Amino acid sequence: MRIWLITIGEPLPIDGTNERLYRTGILANLLVSKGHEVVWWTSTFDHTRKKQRFNADTSIDINDYFTIKLLHSMAYAKNVSISRVVNHYMIACKFSKLAQLESQPDIILCSFPTIELTLAATRYGKERDVPVIIDVRDLWPDVIIDLFPKRIRWLVKAALFVFFKNTRKVFRECASIIGVSDGYLQWALSYAGRKWCVNDAVFPLCYKKPIVTDNQLKYAKFALKNIGVDSSKIICWFVGTFGKTYNLSTVIDAARQLSKQGINNIQFVLSGNGENYLKWFKRAKGLSNVVFTDWVDFSQIAYLMRIADIGLAAYAEGAPQGLPNKIYEYLCAGVPILSSLQGETEALLSSNRCGLTYNAVDTEDFLEKLFILINDRDLRKEMSLNSASLFRSCYSIDKIYVCMVNFLEGLTRSYVANLK
Image 1 (cartoon, rainbow, N blue to C red):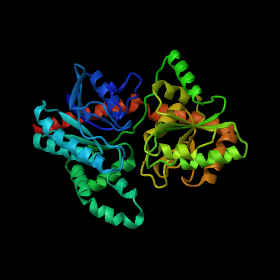
Image 2: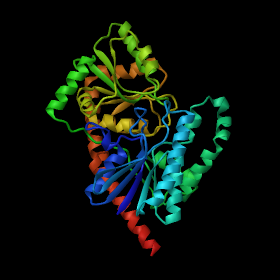
Image 3: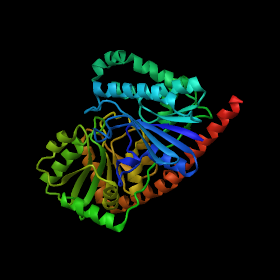
């Protein structure tokens, strides 16, 4: 089959030899390996690093069966900004125009958000009788409202009326909805105004374990050691974007308390970057037990997964994430998880005994849960084994993405049969 994958904001195969691919990149490679033709529509703008890959629309053939089409639009410095809204609108307009010039696909899988791009995809599918599957990754526009103080949220919601209207339209007109968790799927179905049906499914984000050589690990160890990572200490590792839905302030404040108490066998390794980087870097000034690594490559991630003792899922109070990619990354590493997320993540950690949950803004609660893991080696070992076991049995790529490909193939066959 010929399939269009529409996702912006993910790393691309062209970004570098050590770039770790996410959901769309992994799925694209698997589809190609099964003989399907893949066109991935994305953006020239690298959302993570906030830089342009190209200065114009660009099409790149990865191989005979896999093409990446990069749509050019304006850059933006902050995730929450007018520039980003304009970026999304321009990309959707370009897709609507350029899609008409391409060979028609058999099926379209489009990531949500963005609202504008999914709306353009469903409109194309409706005009051409092409089934469009919406893959729910984030809860827009609801999460946008949550960024504002409660007293003015009603006003923001009124201002964003068209976003809510278009979100309902997307989910009501697509052929299928899939989500990264039950909660995300149910959220989308509420916008669609219908119940779960046979065309809907849940496919967790899961994670691809890094495969690296001994030389790559040696280089990664050397590079990280040079910036202060000390594998002889208990490593509490955070990896992710330093954005508004995360809260590293509580972690840094806990590190300061430990430093004042003379507890120096624990190190907090914070990997990533983003709009709050300078804020948290300044907050940690003078702390030898906090190391900022900036973005880490594939081999450095693999090394940190080996030496980490605890994985930090440090989210802001009320963060909208259900079961984010970070959880699967830590499960893959086989480490106990210390998380501030409520709901689905808290339930998963508790029911599988692979982590603890703390109050996102309570430093004392964070330290209390941290000491439980640090002081009870047997518990930490048990949770580590449980994490690794849960990942192998439920969240490995071989299980999730093979099922996802089968789902896409089955839905395409069903849709074609119904048209006849």
